[in-house]
Length: 300
Image (cartoon, rainbow, N blue to C red; front, side, top):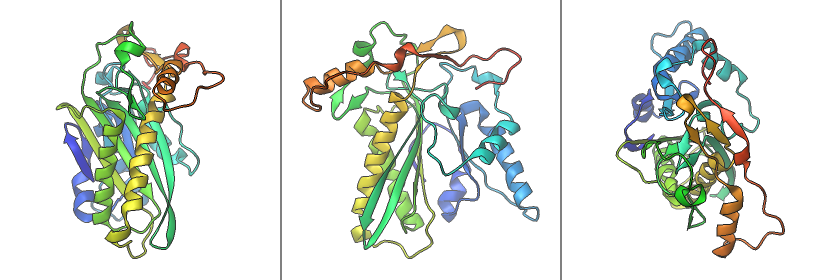
């Protein structure tokens, strides 16, 4: 576990940090739905372990109150149990899905993003994967080139709060111990700086890293390639969380605009970061999503 800035809620984190063991799936949701999600995950754990007397569900959050009516606390036990039951080893969905349906980051519509890297070190080959829930402030930066929302979408609504949060989950099948996983989690939060995060006082920036390996750990002297893979994978996952999102209108008619792909590529080309493309793709910003449910429907 690593807390870059602890203005948030990560239920169950202290026991994971203390013992270095995960007892449950990692569930991500909206701020005021954390506690209902944790209770639902507790039901799942109790059913699987009927003789258990203590359980530690792990649930993180970001505050999507700019677009969502979070006071309704629409997430139910059925939603959580369905999400856990439907989890698979296939590629996760990205953009305005799940806990990313109502999030914003760096002045644009954001959501869920993923990425991975292959690592070869200490005579072993493995994978480092990252999943992020982006909802934080700052100025979008791509390959070192600033992409201010005020310039790329000048007419956009600027009422979203400057802080908010980011949840980062790093998974690997490389052999690393709990202490080394803490080092990986720190690098995951460091990667937010690459995309322009402001790390404001009101941001809850958390990372959790875990391994599926029970083999003897990689020597510390050979762990740098794993650190590099974490930084790269998290950076790309953060960018994917924005580039796969679409313009979204939420509660009160507030709108968060998608990153305009055409403008980003033009700026990267002008800065010499990309060759001039034969055809600049259109932005997804013409696609629109509404997060506000009907009064008799559960929230997204």
